Image 1 (cartoon, rainbow, N blue to C red):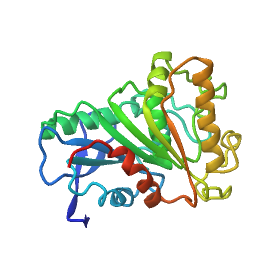
Image 2: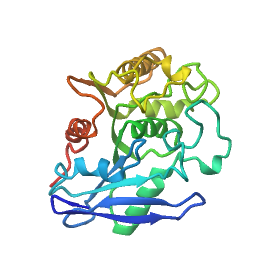
Image 3: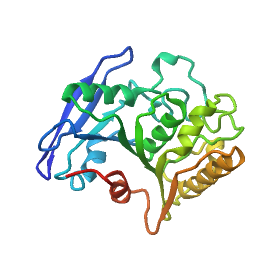
Length: 268
């Protein structure tokens, strides 16, 4: 795993009562107390190298640790839903397996491992990773997310009366958490050409189809749902929407669109 002179390292996180998680990471040339952290959450292919590699050129010479957890299909078959439900809508009642504060645990581990002063982190999710990130921000208690960029999810948990995981009627979210969730700076990216209703990894469940025929439609519907919810409930809404011309379901191009936002203000 070498590209742009970077080495992709791996450590196994086992400091909890859940199955182990391999954490792949890339270090800057020198780690110091000013080093920042960006998490990259993989999609359904779970090919961590595929999701890290597009970032390597962008972070070259930046003081950043890039971390990509690998949620194995054996241990975490429903990672995109935080192990709270299946994609068909079946609720998983074993809360001991929930991933609602997993990234916080990984962040704390790296802070300790490298004596970082960083108090927050930035996070990117594509496709299944986008599903993970928006649900993590909704249902977790972790408030250390500074910026997030997500895109190309196949479906979402809407703020409506649909049953979880398509909505929140039987899995409500605390109002204070929703205030935090909607007020964070999030770049929400959809590709105008991500419009194949028969894409092999697109959820064809009835609940998902109600959100739109394909990823672009579902993304637009979700973003509008958030706008309407924030307006009705008089909550601040700081997300921004970007629909990219010519973009289909492509991790490299999605990364290129997300990187300037997530790297903004970070020192070399």
